[in-house]
Image (cartoon, rainbow, N blue to C red; front, top):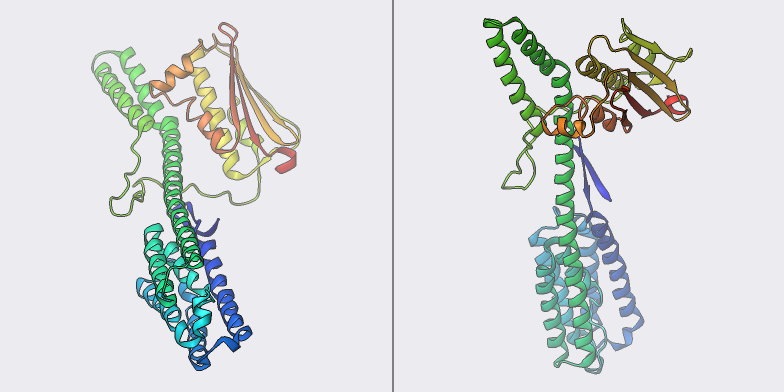
Length: 403
């Protein structure tokens, strides 16, 4: 697809632009063909001066208006009307220029197939309805200049009519598909931004609210009331970031308004960084970290997101397996990927618990871990056996081959 345009982080594409370029080339080739017919059949002209003047006007118009048929924006209604008028004039002038015998036997008109280019411009600009109207006018002009409806005339008129309507319909479908694709891309971008914000909220605000609720309940008194309020706010915030509100399409254009809190994620900049120092910070009492002896390189943004996912996995260990549970972090640098395994010896995850947590708006696994890995083009796999702990395998592209 052509005509790419960058805006608000979404790539817009024009599926009809190649058709406009093809029409530009067609008009030039059709002009050469019409003039060639006139030169080859010069003996059929009763009044050659009429043909010469028309071909001069047609040549000047065609080359002067090449820029008009490069896009729907430049191809205005006024230009289309003048272009069609020139084609109709050439058709109706044909009986004045050529012999009567050539007219009644179905000889070519002065503009010949150039007139079809004018009809195709209507199809590209306004769709099949505009094409049907323009081709009908060309058909009437052909019948008038020949004085009767012959089989050859009917065949040519029907061919132009059907072809132009078909092309106009294809253009309408292409435009509708383009609008649908643009909206889908904007929705996807808004969804990804919402998920990124949800991860950040989960890693900070939600965890603090959950801690306040637990400590307040344990302390009792006024602290218990503070804990209750914190719990209510945690539930409301989880509902907001898990459901979210997508921007509504504007009624005038059908395009989406930008989300007020959406900011495009910063692109990867700078040289690759070593993942080992980012993960070693998680090593503490009860957490063992093992890594290769050589640097494990990833783009800066990917390294930060992977380290944050590891942190979210360890938070789940502390929250669900208890403070006495041991955890191990293993970093591996494979030929085509970087693999981080987080394993614990806790009670494990009951069957169906992850899906239930996602439905309740708990984003630790759904967004802080799986969402981050999905945005990096990687995967997050969970293996858990009740009573035997949980193993989280985080894999992102890169490693020795792409670091």
